[in-house]
Structure formats: C-alpha cells, structure tokens
Length: 532
Image 1 (spheres, rainbow, N blue to C red):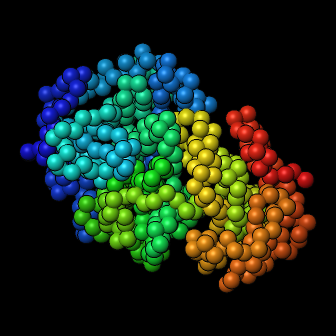
Image 2 (cartoon, one colour):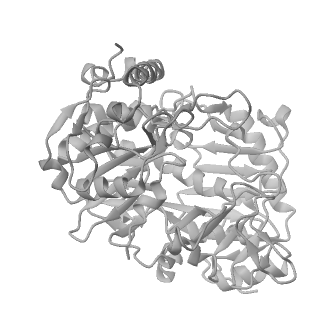
Image 3 (cartoon, one colour):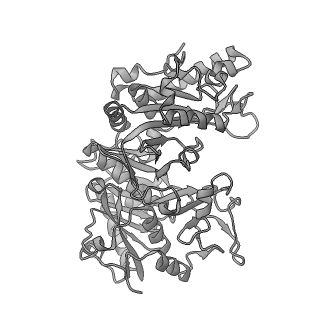
C-alpha cells in the first residue's frame, strides 16, 4: 500500500528495520487497514470501534523520566519517577530489536501545538494502524506541502506488544512509558491505551514551554462573540466539558492549551471525550461524533452482527473514550487559537457544600487555588461512608506536569497580573449541606447565569462581600439568582454545622498547601484560607 508523503528525513539509523513503513496515511486508508488487520470493527454509522485490553486508562505508575545532568534540577521528582540513562539505553536497545522484527509499521509526522512559533515537531511510530489514526486525529496535522521537509524534534515509539523487563529496564512491570528529554525520545511499551501517546506530547510541551515564558495548561478554552477568550480549569466531574461547550461561543479546544504573549492555542487538532453514558440530549455535539466516519471509539461495546454501539454498557471500561477531529464540532475555531484570555474559570465540585457558587480571585488567590487544584467527590456507596472525599490535583493536571508546580503557578500569576485577567472560582457542587448530609446539587441554571454574568463583564459591577473563611470576594446579589445561594451559610439548616464543616475544609486546604509554602511568595501564602 502506498504511503502518502515520505519526508526527505527518514527514520533515524538507530531504528533501522526491514518492516514496511506506511508514512503519513490519511483517515480512510488507516481505517481500512485497521479493519483488514483485525484491529477493530466499523459501527453501523461508520465509527471505528476498538478494544485496548487490560489497559483502559493511563498507566501513571509505569511512567519514568531519565534522570541526568539536565533533568536532575528541573523535574519535580516528588511526583515523577526516574530511571537512569543506562536503564533507558537498555529499553532503547530492546525497542530497536523489536522494531527490527515487525512486518509493518506506521509513521505520522505531526505538530504538538497550533501556534507555529511554539509548536514542536513530533514523529510517532506505531505498530497498530488505529494508533496511527488516533494520534493523527489528536495532534495538529501539517499541510501536505510541509511534510516533505518535515524534520522531527521528538520521536515517540509506541509498541503495545513490547514487554518490559523490570530487572533490566528499571521499571515496575511489563508496561513502560520512558521519557528522555535530552535524547528527545519517548518509548511506550506494553499498553494498547492510545491516550499514552497524546499525554506524552503534553508532557513534552509542559517541559519545554515554561522556558519560553509560555504557560502550558490542562484546560478547555472558548471564545465569545466579542472575541473574548475564556479558560476553564477543572478536574473530572466539575463540568469543564459541559460548561465550555457553549453553542454561543467558539471552541478552541477541550484539553490542553498554551498561553503565549499573543494567543491561547490548542496543543491538539482533535478531541478525546469520555463516551460512557453519553446522550444526545445532554451533549448533542459530542454525541453526533459517535455516528461519524473518522471517529475512533475505545472500549465501547458493539454488537458484532448489527454493529450497533451501546454507550451505556461499561462492561469493557468505565473510561470508554472517543477521539475525533475538532472540526466535527460545529462551532470549533478554524485555527485552534484565540486571543489572550479575558476570563479564567476555576471549576470545583465541592461535595462539602461550603464554597459559594462563584467568587472572584486576586492574582495571588488565583495562584493559591491553581496550586491547590481542589475538588471533592461523594466518597462511594459502601456502608459507613458518611463524608465526601477531598481531592487536590495541583495545577488541575498534576500527572502531566514534569516541572515543579510553582513554575506553572508563577507563570499563571504573572500572566494574570500582566493581562488584567478576571479570575473566577465556580462551585458546581453542593449547597444547603454536604452531598451526604442534606445538600442538593447546585442548579445548572444558576451556574450558567453566574458564568454568563462573569463572561459578559456585568458581574464586575456587582457588590461584593469578603468570604469569612477563604477571603475571596463573593457577589451579594446577581440578577436572576436567589441571593440566598450566594451565601452558603444561609442555605444550611444549621449554621453552626456549616461553620464546623467549613473549618474542617479550611484545614484540608492548609494541610495540602504545606508542600508549596517554601516555593511561593509571602503574598500567595497570605492568600490561604484562615483557620478559625
């Protein structure tokens, strides 16, 4: 089968292989090959449906970074695992041997990042056709005219069939994700979960961009009708995807972005959305992609005869996923970019029922809450569980941040101050009590009304009070919103119970932030909530 465009700069000599190399194939050919090779099935509406086996999500404990003279002082080793240059060399040698034994390999030349001056050239070599389709969908695709002269800066080699040897490779299991920032090489073995490839590109950009003064962010972003960009930070379950997918605003991207002096730019050219229990009513734009050719559905149950899919069936994975080009979303940005932000939204689902539905943050408070990365979930359904579970994920994306969080926090604070950006903390969680003790979920219409007022600028004209626990500014009254909801203590049947639980939550924040205190300015430390 012919390749699309073979660049003048072929594979590095280290990866010499007798395999048939399929260069830069497009969607149609890759889908055809994936089906022919038994890698997946076509659904009745044309999506490619695949299984990833035992790995249905990231293998966070199997990711390692080479610790050498350059990375020793730049990587956040408290949260990133290391291997020696010698161990990486052994992995590399065994990957080369594995490549030499393949019959077919698929190569894609792609960009990580949509802004030309801040993107990175990435070459991705895979043994599965559908993995080649996945990464081609998720990263930014060069024009055909640019492929002939494409020169890779980083190479990613993805071999699900590779079995790592912990004794020889310094890893933990037969699965390994090994990153060499100096050698500009990522080796992924022993997992068929395609998301490892895209997350590796995030890690590369999150490592490189801060040195250029560009802020990398795990967030969604959109543009209003007046050209105002909004950034949405939030962990899973906070409403990040739902609230940023606003039909009245243009989508820049749903997962990772950079913030330069001139733009907010998507790292990707596609989207990677959770599919489990997706409905046409709740998320029509995303649902529509499940019925389009070119979409890849991972671990979605399909009837092999009728080819009907069942998005409600979690028997293969709770983390079933779909990847699709961003242009399948009707209101997506043509160039995956927008102006520098006017507003930043930090989303939290506070299951304790303490935080107000919206608060305005100073730059120092913004850095504090960004480093905290707080949300809370209902702690489960087992007998005896009576309290929600607090989650702190620094920078709202700790797994993809190779440098110390303070690097990203200081960049954010600097850019907020320089650009006069308004920052809002929005609680999409509970009010009137905790999730397990009398509370109710914050009405979505209230969240949308407050969010719209923040984004159109009218909320800046409201009267604000200072929250007694967290010190941030909370609006006293907003048109169309019950003022009682703006004062969480007033929504509780027992105000004393609220006070006690608020004190407990403040204590959780203080305990979590202790790890950052030595790395931030006094003004940020002073932005901490106050223990009574």
